[in-house]
Length: 233
Image (cartoon, rainbow, N blue to C red; front, side):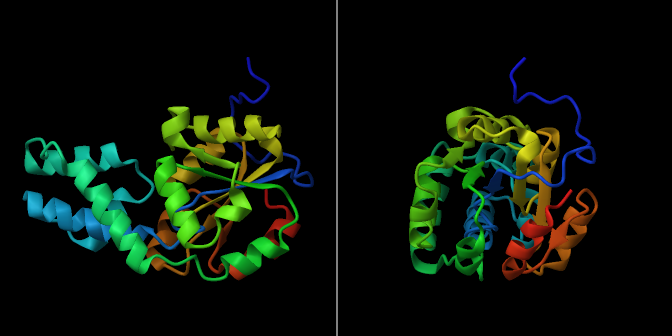
């Protein structure tokens, strides 16, 4: 068994005083990309014949990998989407990011105050991660410490991506804190034996979803440095 394997999803036993790594999700935590991406996806789904609102798409697709989103759209359609659907959506999303994407409010200042090592672990493909982090002027803070589920072959809510990030960074899972904004991300962090902070961005719906499974929520990124000093459990 790997040093980084865990069998319990209960993080209450972990040492609250020792933290050696902060693992950030990207979409909705570092970059304000989720509404942009979901808007493009909802429009593409509607054009394909599966009418879905942006609000419903956010509730249904937040934190999921693209193929899972497409499967949900296909179930609604009762057929497969066109062969180029995913490539078309990714291309349209990249253009929308170029025009609209911004960093999460307060993230630059928060990162400047954090002294623990940091990395990114995301369900998104590496090309998307480097593109969006670059647009948000965050790439330099994480370059060489960006982990994509597509490269690992494990997507949240499975814990494999987080475990891979911790092992690569040389840190035991119990000494990691994950910052997440999705249910699947919180589930993955807990399954990996890591402590987790749920970021709502001030959105009530996100707060309700995360609050059901995560006891440590925060609403403004400016609060993160102080929370990390408290060493969440």
